[in-house]
Length: 212
Image (tube, rainbow, N blue to C red):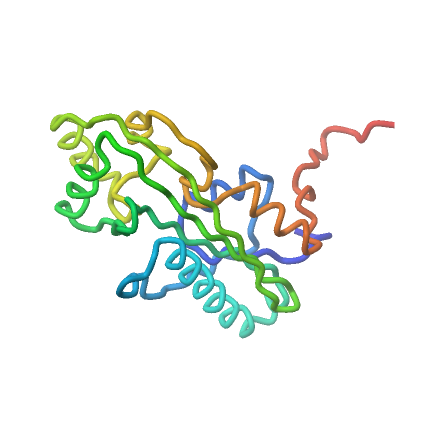
């Protein structure tokens, strides 16, 4: 990718990579930041999302500093938290966790907080928090049983993936759909562009001549 600065995604999430690609951005490297994502005692959802995204950005920055070909790259890191009121739902790894999440979300509103951090080549960190309200339909036992059997919930905040089968549970979204998926595209692209990253570099189709 000549003609632009390097870009690193501090995540191994296929969803976040797909979203970046949707915006015409192709990372030069993936550097997943492995951190302890356990909420602190009494921590509010907004604070948790901000803290974890910032921590991921710092871990990725430390890794990039050690690589000559990536040093000075832009870094994008994010974390998503699903909450009902002040209660933070887990990133479900166990069947019982996912079942509890789905029963809690059934027929009610919840909030999804995604914090995104952009690290600049000068190692400044710019951060935004996006809050989105989501309402689920009332889930029948058959809905929950079938969704659990799909396995799609595994590792997902709140025990569901809105871009998959669980999209059929959503009655209403107020806010950013891409934020619920895991990376708010508007805010991410705006942060990158504001720091001088050429976000439209990948939009040009070389087979299409520029207009005169």
